[in-house]
Image (cartoon, rainbow, N blue to C red; front, top):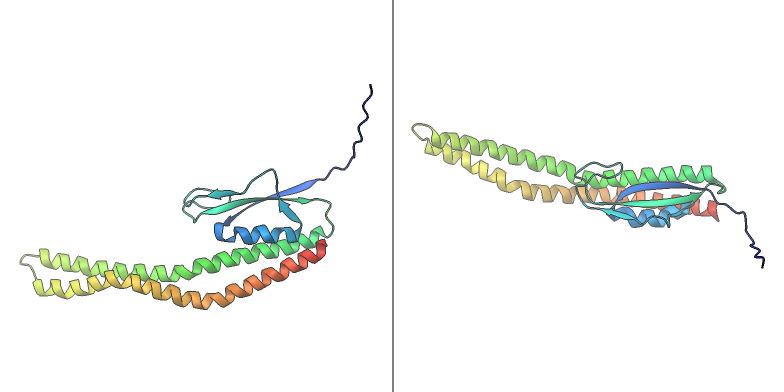
Length: 191
């Protein structure tokens, strides 16, 4: 008994890519990368990284993220142009991350500075009360701005984050529009 097998000699060569993105941007990347010829690698599942762990291309202590795995046919038409569009997309994602971080950076610096000044006043109040003889009037005079310096940073932080968020929202919307335009161009090149 003889078996005959029909074997198609159609090998597809793939190039592979692994990216690490914040969890809030993983859906955007999963939806956008197919526009540049990439498909999710069926041999890997996306991996969620808990906050504070080391991960590919990242630093310890970062927010949680997701590692995404993609593959793309090496013989894809317009691959060079798709790669250029994809690099622009990647830079837009990096700019979105930087804009997101900038919402809290200056607010955190301002709040910590005010808190540190409050600590300096409280240290002065402590030295005034432990002096021999204790200088009560100076203790009270220094403790009041010290307590204010401990209370104000929370409200200052909230106000500055809100203000910066209002400034940055239009810039983020422009980046999302730019990402949409890049994806449309890439999708037209594939189809």
